[in-house]
Length: 180
Image 1 (cartoon, rainbow, N blue to C red):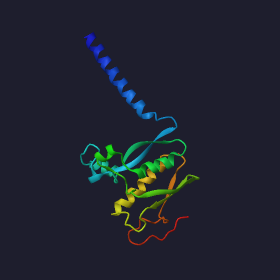
Image 2 (cartoon, helix red, strand yellow):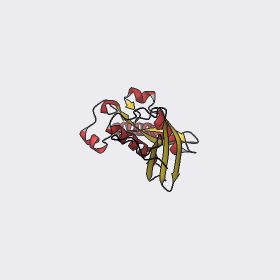
Image 3 (cartoon, helix red, strand yellow):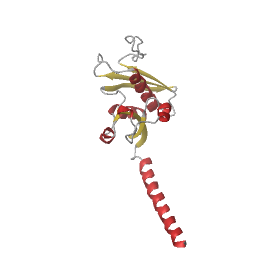
Image 4 (cartoon, helix red, strand yellow):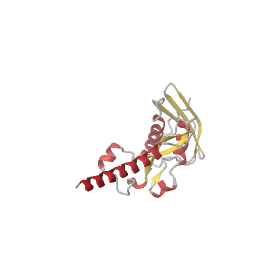
């Protein structure tokens, strides 16, 4: 019985140590880098395991945004996080069915964080192209950018400017509210 307990204790220690090594490797970025979250979404509204998202999960996260980590420079982590979001999923994430939230063809023209307000200006390589295929697309896009920027403690609010307009997501009419 004593050998059995010792064996179980050793197995527990090995499993815990292996898990601890994995966690520490994920939590310690390269020198001069830090870990941030970006938010992607699954194609066909399926979870990472390939199963449909549960009703409870769908209620808690109506947009089905999935956080994934990226390593960015400590010098400008907010900009790095936005660039990572715009770059989209890695090849591994693509094979798992994750997509970028309508960030294709975007570039960051400006990012300022002043008094808790992050103002990000984005330019599309095709300003006249329809950007969002449905109502959820605009919401998913803006919420993803909000979550990316609000992970930083100095950001309380986010203002997004796309191709010179703040009201770019209005589906009923052309945008009219110019960015400051």
